[in-house]
Structure formats: C-alpha cells, structure tokens
Length: 329
Image (cartoon, rainbow, N blue to C red; front, side, top):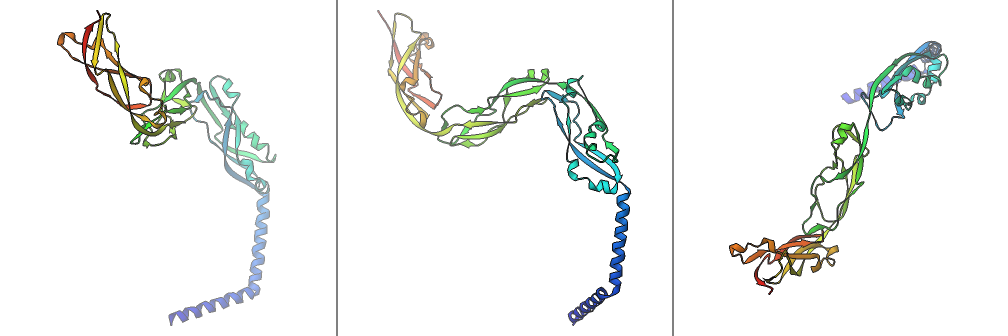
C-alpha cells in the first residue's frame, strides 16, 4: 500500500515539473540567467586578474665534478597580472618548464648565484607586454660548491657464490664493467681501493647473469649504480687419475724409495673440463725437508700441486707413504 502511495507521489511531482517547463516562467528564468552570465563574462575579461603557478626548473651545464652545498630549487613559483581576456588566452604549455643554463656560472669563483627575475624573462618574453610579474618565489638563490676528484677502482664480490649440489663453476666469475669511476674529495677517494657489490644470494645450477648493485661508500658518487655479474655454473662429476710421486730437495748421494711409488688422485671436475684434466695436471710431491730422521719416522705426508682451477674436492689415496732411504753409492 505504501509503495503505491510513493508511485503516486512521484507521478504528481513529475507532472508539476512538466507543467513548469511548459510555462513562460522557465523561459523568463533562462533569459535572465544567460543575461547575467554574459554581463559577468564581459566584466571579467576587462578586469585585472591574477594567476599563480609553479613551473619546474631544468638545469643544464652542471659539470659532473661539482658538488653543491645546497640543492638547487626544483620549481619557481610566480604570480602574474593582466586583464582577464589576456590571462585566459595563455596556453598551459607556456609554463611547462624553465630551462636554466649554468655553464658560465661554474667558471666563476665557486659560488652559484641565481637571480630568478632575470631567468623568468624567458617566460615573460612570450607573454603580452601588458602582463606584469607580481611575485617570484624564490626570487634569489645562492650556494657554494666544491670541485670533485675522480678515480677508477675495480668492482669485486662481497661473498662466495654458492653452487647447487653436484654443480661447480667451470670458469671465473665475470663482472662487467670491471672498473667504475668514483667522484669525491681527495680525502674521500684516497681511502677507497675497490668497491663491493651487494651479496649474490641463492644457489646456481646453470650459467646466469645477474644485475648487482654497487655498495656506495659515504661521501662519494659513482658513475653507475649496477654491474652485470655472470656466474658460470654447470654439473660436475668424479674422476680419478694415477700420478707418480716426485721428489724434491733430496741431497746428492741419496735415493728414496716409496711404497707405493704412485698414488690415486680423486677429484670433482666440471663436465666441460673433464677431458682436459689428466694425470699431467697434478704433481704429487715427496719433500725431503719434511722428514724427521731423528724420530725414526717411517712415513711422510705427500704434498699436491695442480695447474687447473676447475677441480674440487681433491683427495689423495694414500695421502702418506712409507719410504726407505738408500745411499746412491
């Protein structure tokens, strides 16, 4: 029942609106409304108006080896005044950016001085001669600066890169670029010999290049923030070779016999270097200087030397041997 009353109410109100729109009252209302708007518009375009804006500033000609004591203003605020019709005619693109060339500024005595009234003339010259500047914020800026020194330093890892199980690095890790340029005072850069990169996390099971951030010391700037680090990873396998024992520092007139005369060298090697690592890669050494003849020692621990950087987990079997010393005569 209440819903039917509501519909009837809506219908009555709709009829009233329709009747009003058909009446002379609405025509009279629209006429005076448009007349008032026209009079207001004519008054506005002939009356002095003010607008305020903030325009971004783009600086050019700042040398890389310069450090300012204070940051340069990023925006210039201004208020201009003119007749309404003139103000409204200005396109927004006129106030997109104010470019300031500081090339000549840095050839002077270590002081940057900006008079924005002079700089704003670049904008004002595009406006009507009748347009006046009411306010500039800031109108003046000054700061000192210092010249920086440069130095090239290498970029190095800050942690040991981990391999996935049964995987090894088959080559050296590559960092590109190997060196970067730092800028700073002479005292700041003299203490820096190299720069670390942030730790490389995770385990690698294949060759991958990652972008690593350079750790920036306080008081210096770097010509780049990242380097490309290539980690050469691949699967590894076990291999065993038999290597004869070599002797070092044995005096003349003495012969040494070991039991056995050769040993097994077992190691892990990357698949790409499997064939290149042979018994000639290793040298198993019996060093006479290690003997303790007065202690009735009958065994000696062997030393191992090898020429490949791509073998890991090296074991000797046996790692020490028995020996006898004989006179050569």
